[in-house]
Length: 256
Image (cartoon, rainbow, N blue to C red):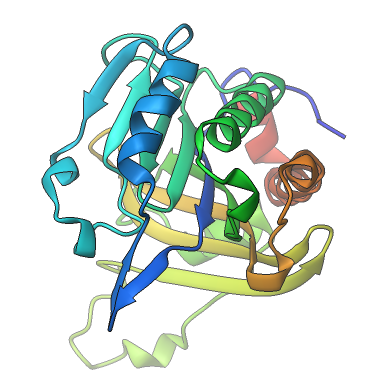
């Protein structure tokens, strides 16, 4: 159900994230006992495609506080995208401007397959979270334009503060920051979809950032790697549907 590819897409980053359950070894201490073996084994699987290994500063963290923190990054070359990241209990695949869904999906499937093939006792991996996240951004001048009118007109999202809040109070009506978040349960895939709008930067210029996230956790997360491809298809279809419904009209034409 993939729609047309936008020539000037607003994408900042596309992220797939898989988390699996860690082993509790003490009160509040959870580790992955196979992690150190996993890093080397995973790299041997990925090195033909992603030979550039980039240890991150977090790689020096002690095991007892490193749970779910990305520590190693694998790329085709220095500063190149897409990339694969690994840490205790977490695998991510990230892409940016060159993102095309069909290619991104293949990389995810390859990375997840390599994880399961590299992990000792892979049949015991318990996935506790699957996340597909899109971060988009456009430049926006908050002083000359009304962000609430923009959201209403261009993204069909009506949010407006009561104007009298600013009357005779000395409070400037231009927001120095804002962060609007919405979450809704979904059935395909089973889980939740999250939508966020916030003030941020696009290449050092003030902008509107919005995130679309589809997430399955706990019992809703797929437990077998064979099911993850179905999850990806459903998560992408839902994200894609929401994205194009939000930008339909002037914004879509701006991105074409």
